[in-house]
Image (tube, rainbow, N blue to C red; front, top):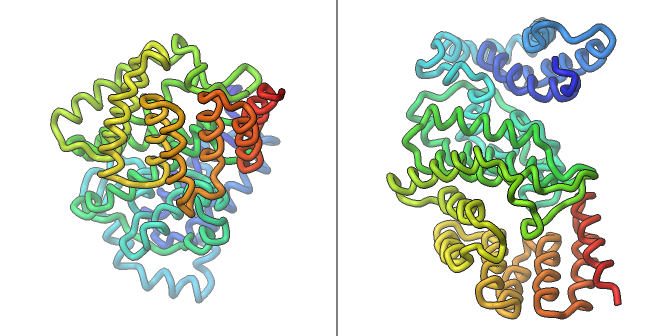
Length: 403
C-alpha cells in the first residue's frame, strides 16, 4: 500500500467491490451489507496494528463470508436464504461476460446495476446506490437531492437482488448515469465538511463511467457523461489554493488545467455529438468543452454557452440548469438581465435554501457596481452553505466589499 493511501481510503475503495462480490455469490443484499460492515469494522481495528494484508479485498471477503455463515445458522436467516435459492443459482451460474454475470468481471459495476432495481422508485434506486457504491452518508445524499435528510433516509431500503440480463441493464442505464453524475458532483464540490474536493469519489465515478462505456460503447449519453466528468475534473489543479481555499473559475490559472483530460473529453464529446442526438449529459459536456478551450473568462464564447443552456433547459429542465443559464445571461446581456433570470430560479421551492442562488446574486450585484447589495448576498450565501471552503470564500468576498 502506498504511504499516501490510508487504511480508511483503502476500505472505502474495497467496500463496494466486496459487497458486490458477496451479493453476486450469495444474494440477499441486506445480509451481505451487514456482513461487509462488520468486516470493515474488523479491518479498521486490526489493520493499523497488524498491518494491511497482501490481498485486502480477499481478506474482507473472507471475513464477511464468515459473518454470513453465522447469520445463516439462525432459522429465520435460513428461511430467507431458501426463498432466493433459484435466483442465486441463476446469478452465480453465469460466468463473466455472460448474461447474469458481472460485466468486465467488475463487482462494483455489477452492484451499480443491482441497486437500480425496477421494484424501487427512481429516487430510492439512486439513494441506495449512492450509499452502497459511492459510500455517501444519508446527509450527503440528501444535499445532492435538495431534500431534507429525514426524507432521504426514508428512501434508502435494502432488498435481495440478482444481476439483470443485458437487455434489462440497458433500460437501467439512465438511473445508473444519474447515480454516477451525483457521485461525481459530490466529489467535485463536497456539500459539507472541511475539504472542497473528494477525489476518491470523482476518481471512482470516472472509473465506473468508463466501465459502463465499455459495456455500452455506442450510447451517446454514456460517452457524454464521461466527457463531462473529464472536462470538469481537468480544472481540479486550479480550483483550490495551497491551504485548501476555493478559487472560482474566473480566477483560476488555466495553464494548470489537465490538458490530457481536456483533449480526451473534447474528442469524446465531438465524436458523440456527430453520431447521436444530443442528450442532457452531452449538452453539459459541450458547455464544459467551450469553457475548457477558452483562454480566459473574458474570451469564453458566452453566446454559444447561452444557446447550449437554452437547448438543455428544453431537453432537461431543472432549477440548477436555470441557475447556470442565468449566469450565461448575465455574461451576454449584463448583470441586470441576469438578476431578472435569477428571480425565476429563486421562486422555485427547491432552491429557497440553496446557497448558490445568493452567491450568484451577489456576483451579479458586484458586476453591476452595487457593493452593499453584493455584500449582503455573500453573507446570506455563507450562512446557507455547509461547506467550510465555500463559506470561507463567500465570507472573504463579503469582507472585501466592506465600506
